[in-house]
Amino acid sequence: MVVAIILYKDEGTLAEIGYAAALGKPVIIFDPRKLLQNAFVESICKKIVHSTEDLINNIFILMKTSK
Image (cartoon, rainbow, N blue to C red):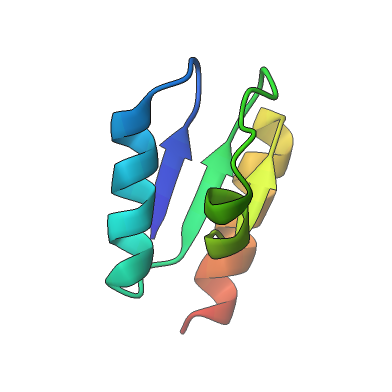
C-alpha cells in the first residue's frame, strides 16, 4: 500500500503514484488542500481523502480487504 500526501503540486509524487499503481499496489491519496486536479491519477488510486480521520479509516479498510 502507498499513501501519497499532496501538500503542493509536485509532479514527482504523481509519478510515484503511477509507478505504484503499475506495480499493483493500492494507492490512497491524502489531499488536505484539495490541490489534485489530475483525472488520470484520480482514476488509478483506490481512494482520495481530505481529512486525517478519513485517511486512517481508509487505511484500515484497505488493510482489512486486501488480506
